[in-house]
Length: 144
Length: 303
Image 1: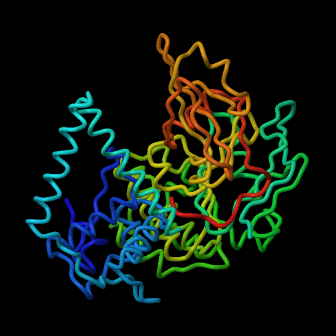
Image 2: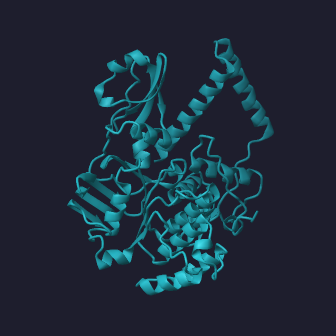
Image 3: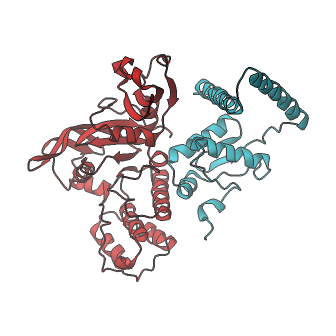
């Protein structure tokens, strides 16, 4: 199979989509850039694939890519340079191991609480997802 | 700025109305999916916009007031008919030559580069190409005319999944690079939500639903609850039944934009809907309409 020409040209992030995930397309792109930053595949100064390259390889509406790049700018991770493209601006704040462990402990405490109240695993997961989604929507609303 | 404006547009073939009293305003820079069952009037609307047919009554304008079929409209509107309008006995090179001679504007470099990228042999007979390659060639020729508005009648119908992906990729790249507007009719719902930012649903010759995809989705939600309480729901919700099993029913209902979100009716749970579900619900209920009004609200937004 031929390597997709559209994606190898610039930057070092190759986008892919999971159409069954239920995660909005623009958010999948945002998360993949963040993931690449975390893994060190992208760093400050790297160019993201152009909108044209991305829509050609993924067959999606250009507005979706522009929305993802705007979101990355809003999160302070990327910046658009008129006529040139969108470039990585900052490193992703890495969360330390100790802090992650502390957060996991507090989440586990909450989950025990929820289980004691009678929620089964599925209900706990559903509630976690719903609250997280509301949080994002609230933040999106604030930034709009 | 509109790329297509229809006012009280009707088209009758002898005794049968193919389109009846359609009002539409499709904004510049949009990618619009034209959806509906066979015989809904999709092709008729595209043929009217391309100037290949004349309205029986009412009016249709393209690109801010141009009469379809006028010389200025012909220069700026590209049209690809359902049957990939190519000369099957001609070679690929011959097809490009003819297209160059027939069109006042012709970007030959673009056409040649595209044919090269598609690895189409210039000497091959057009009729010997795969369905996917024929569709790509027809699209390449349409794009090389540098249109501001591209009309595509069932472009995906005969394409396999890979060819469909490549075709839509090329189309979206043209939208991104040149800001052209696209109106395409399709039966294929799965790609719709990723490609379109606007939607026109036709049913029995009438506009059933039209608007920006995000707004249409925000304007609907799914209620799940007891089937025997459907009649107690307010009529303004205009519920459409999606599925029912025993005592439980899923309903697609309208939300009221610009107002405070109302709590779900007692006994019902609320969930957001997705484009495919919404389109199928409307297709299954041809009498249901939800028009945002004669004007689309605002410029094309993100999907």
